[in-house]
Length: 167
Image 1: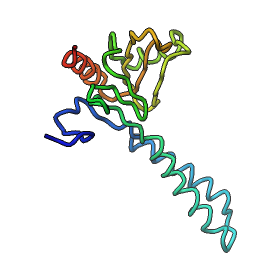
Image 2 (image 1 turned 90 degrees about the vertical axis):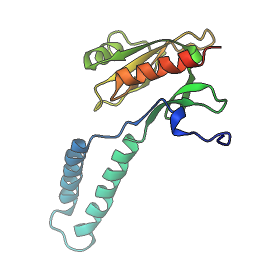
Image 3 (image 1 turned 90 degrees about the horizontal axis):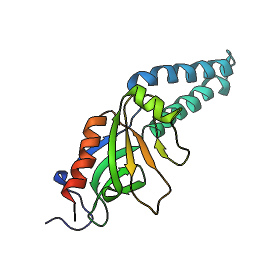
């Protein structure tokens, strides 16, 4: 048996990281290099290398930070399965329904049909998402909307975790 607090691969039903796609790195670095070139403008000395030494690593750090969000369905601290989105935790016992969303569905739920009390973790470079409807009377949040590259798999993982952990 594994010590408390450790997770074995069998217990994680879904896990993904919402990284920035590789092709977005190209225009980001091109913009950073263009800005560094504007600052340089052919000047000698420190102005020749400092803009590149500062802006290019800052661009890489920014893109990495944008893609650090992790989404998982796994046991929490108490052993109860949770939907984990970065630092947010939602025990699956509070989930009433999970709706996989394509690009159009995500656009609608985050646009015209948006609820200002909803919990949203949205990454524009990821077309899919899930809407997790809640049934917790103590929580004013009506639903969560979470970006995912695999909306059907995430929705199924949440529903499977809820089914497996029925009291």
